[in-house]
Image (cartoon, rainbow, N blue to C red; front, top):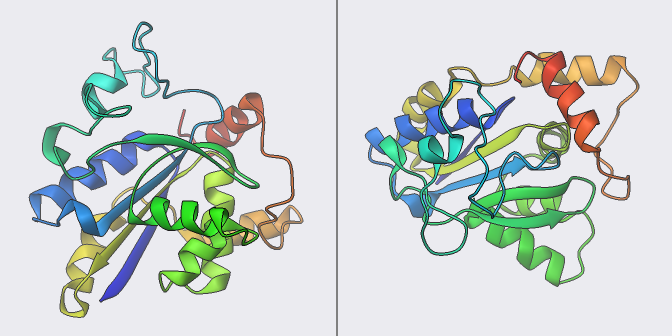
Length: 205
């Protein structure tokens, strides 16, 4: 099996990628999502409209429907991720997560391994340098999609996920130009305002 991982600056972009995966017949058991929730764009209460993509429609109606736990994705991705749940990741803070990678991160954290997101990614076969970059991307407000696929299907899935995905090499250069070197799980997570500024910086509000 190959691991295909892409970072998106917004949950809306990641959700469109989920739709493409669902249309391609990728089983939910092979898909995982981790999205920054520091600014509370996704909440367990369902009384207030959340419209992060500013299209006039509640994002939960677009991306989630009430069900077990916090919700389940709908539209083209119906059933692809059985349930979104909230958790905290060291160095990132609150996230919305689902799938096998989230379960691995929880297991690593429960086992006392430092840097649970890095451990989860590297245990899944993501190179360590890439894992640090992906974790930092989520820390700054992004959404990470990780998919397990047969080696023979890797190119097709890469093509499906690459639309609207972050150019991680360019992003790494951008981070490093500002003094970043590696993800640090001991650093305080970004505040809601800081996450909004990061998203605004990359045009993903």
